View 1 (cartoon, protein in one colour):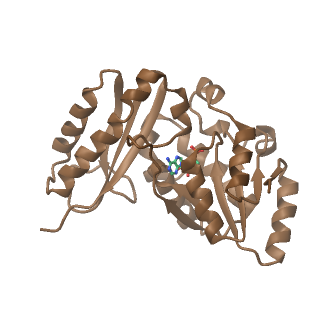
View 2 (cartoon, rainbow, N blue to C red; view 1 turned 180 degrees about the vertical axis):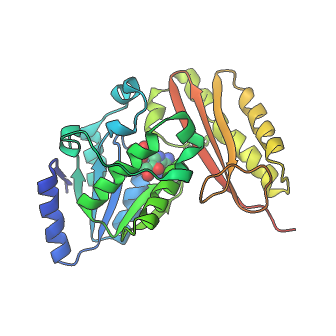
View 3 (cartoon, rainbow, N blue to C red; view 1 turned 60 degrees about the horizontal axis):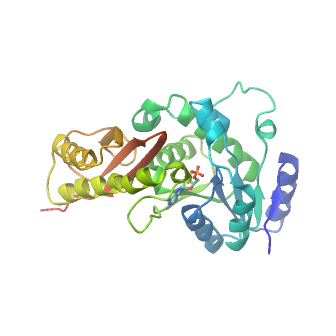
Length: 286
Ligand code: AMP
């Protein structure tokens, strides 16, 4: 069966109202399209948990800090709808930017602390754009549960914080990162890698695994861990490190000394493609 495609807010509101009246549990997967098996894992989980699954496909202009990045972002709408249908999603919500933003907004959602470091530091306004569009989508779709990938751990932390702070009646479900066999996290941005860049890209995950190994074997010095990870990344001359941070997993604040579970997060450039990845590490109790 093909998932229905809806492009306007009045029409999706009508469809959601019908679902709610019949007591169906709505699961929601927000995406920016160019779907891959990572998105597929979110949809699969939503289908397993819900009676009606909505996938949004919306390349949100307000979360791009560079116009050229927005314009170059991969788009593959017919294939995306085919994947949603194959995964048994019920409805694809694919609004134009003019539907979501008929006028410039005077209202926005800023999730302070957790948005500040890591990607927030290098992509000004990014998380404000994300939180605001997700809040709008939550109000439109009114899901009971919404599904997010661990791959974008800071985004997930921002959304969790927003939902808690603003009392949104939505359960946020985390789905583990889906990877290629060589460890590269699936990402719509991988489509921008040329063969040389693609061959070097697994170094991100390799460096994270080396860091995780140190943490799990009792190293508590974040500086030493960062150095080890950076030296592994340095073996691939075309990889340009943007940040490699060891952070507290809920509020994403950087740590110097490790005393409990941490997330190690990385962002790096390969040519004009920026990739991010992260791993959760739990030190063994000795
Ligand atoms: P995006 O379309 O990149 O905005 O991502 C939409 C959702 O898919 C977000 O919740 C992402 O965290 C999630 N996602 C992206 N890549 C992966 C992956 N490799 N594994 C699991 N989830 C992912």
